[in-house]
Image (tube, rainbow, N blue to C red; front, side, top):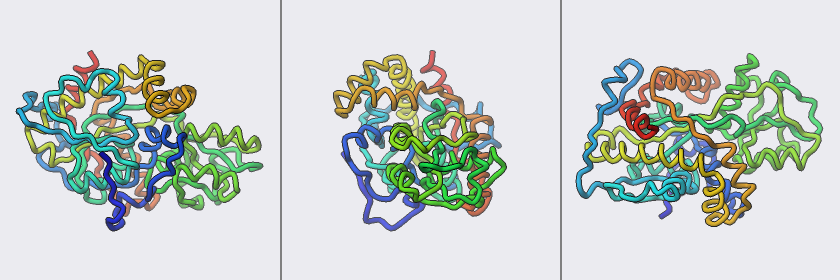
Length: 366
């Protein structure tokens, strides 16, 4: 099942990465990664009774009903099989105590529009959408968080450039996708060098278009995503990585809505789904060859080498509790977006986080 919203008016969830990506075989294989990367800014309404911020007691918010009533359905929004493939191949979609209605979306913006339209109950995003969510009014709640290794993104120069460090980007044209994790990566890199987004000239492009534009010299530097980054450097031997860029792990979230969390049946189903996702992620990370063969080679029809490169940049997944530390990191990113002018005023990002499923994550890891 696929869902599209191309005819809807432009909303914050479509500020960046509009339209469908070109569906070449390689890009089909990249969808699992680019789905995370091309996520545009989305919003979140004021939290309902299910939400908890840093001002609330985390311990008091970890309880949820575990009995799933008969007839419960959970609508899951996926991108490129990122959720469904590990769940299926690990056996975690067997014996679910609720019906699952899977929807596959061609891009992050379309998935976020589905949340806006109350068409899905749970899905995943990178760390950028909740930041914009807290400022724009769309209902969104983060219920699980995990980190992937650094190296998924890089700052690279155009061919023949004399740019060497992040500090050298001042006054230069830098390409990235506005409102996405690519922008977050740039903001963090600039901040490390004592710079802000206003210190560079923005070139807003889709992630799949950036390498081509950079090779033509349409920008002085750009944020590239693997596995598009390494081929770019190979094809352009006079281009190079920019030293001093952000080297922190990438953060991913499982998200739902406060509306869904107000339904006891959905609460219980979400608790079970969170646990299954933690177990499926662990299985994928410990069965690299099997997952690569069954998913990337057999399902997506791409070389095993490409699949392993994707996995190397997105696994292993280290789940972290939703607490003051994780919300603090998100708040720092929110403040960077505020200072860059992407969001108009300081926001309390903790309102987007809900800690009740920390116990489900912990139990699934045992």
